[in-house]
Image 1 (cartoon, rainbow, N blue to C red):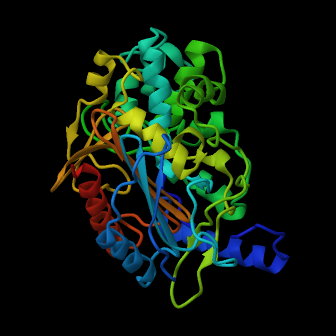
Image 2: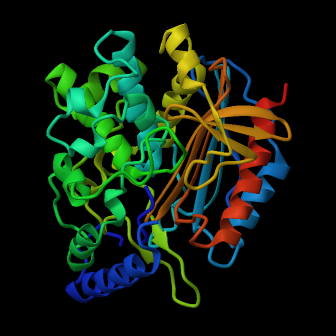
Length: 407
């Protein structure tokens, strides 16, 4: 999810909130949706007595440099998990007001990595014969426009559907510009583009669209008769032990949280953690998680044994060369079914990225599910927003992938 953009650990004075909202409106119009360092901390993931991985001073220096970059994030936290050992690297701060460092238990907006969660729900339903990758919108969601009826679940998951993107619709943006905390009916988000035809014939090309994963969640609800939030709990959260992951409807974040900032020098960083309602992104970008939980999820999603059947895993990993996540991940990107392949100079990992006001995320793992990486910064960057920062972030991410794959 790529919406452009307030710290609220305590009540915020009215004038501060007004300033934030004006700021957000300007950012929405401009982007159209489209620091002191801390020492490295290494901690065991599970078994006591397991020796931690050796500290890597070069990786720590890369993070230190990143938080010192003009316009860069106030803080960053990266988790490298190899087998039963987890190394935690962090620099800068999770909260400028208190100066505390980022923690592995901090809640944060995972942005478009939420698309991997909707993909996980869909593909686990495929394994249960509740869904088929060739099921169409017309079969399962007949109330949606007839022009969309031939679009399949496979095309939605691979962003080859041609569905117009609701998050760029003028009526949607107008509501956000008026009230960024507006509570949307998440199941009616596609109404904002219901009068539009497909952007291209289904399956004819790749184009990242936030509408795709809204339709995926609605399909899952249609075949199960259960709310998407309950399906997330049954099919993803509980099987993987994700106790700090949720899909809220409002703008509040669970405490404690990694504060997200708009960093636009020479102005001081502005806390925008709770400036937007998650209801307007829902299955496409509304999930809140922690570095610990996100790392556990991507480990299973990238290749953990038993999470998907062999046949469904094969379908998941049918890649479109050059199809990039938003923002692009490290190395050369290719797109599969709610998962991306990142070929780096050191090897290949699989996962998803995301950006949201105040946050940029990468979650990736190896094909066997034995190694995983999450990399979280508390400011937003994308190909259209601070592209120079994105290039630097991707380079640092690639260094972390190399460390992850190192034997």
